[in-house]
Amino acid sequence: MDGFLGSYRHSLDAKGRVSLPAPFRHGSDSESFVLIRAHDDALTLYPDDAWREVANRLREMRERRPDVRHLLLRLTGNAHRIVPDGQGRILIPERLREEAHLDDEVLIVGALDKIEIWNPEWFEQRTAVGPEEFDELAASIFA
Image (tube, rainbow, N blue to C red; front, side, top):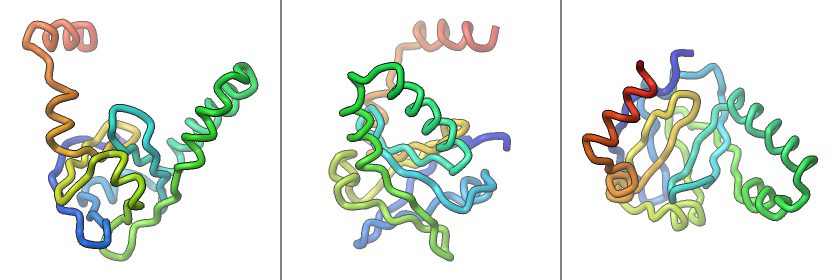
């Protein structure tokens, strides 16, 4: 898999469903995903193979750091297994829509091994960096 790349604006329907962009539907061999709210007021959609890696890290963390138990319970207790319907739509549970401030329109962003679902305005605010900072980060990655 080359990874999930690009960003797409899509509408949420009245039931809280959103259509996954076609490239994302075919970007993984997984038939199901795990949807969680992990950080930045965005939702993260992990294909099964990527979720297995996350789950393994969570298990290791739980064994080494008993103090993170409540955080792990919050993450996994609010996680949902998601299977796209025949039209490639996923249902975003109401609680997760509220936590991520999702309204009528969402921004679906490829993040290599996972997909993030954002309120478009929040995405712009959270990812805004100045040109110097961008150039510095890009140089450290692509140098």
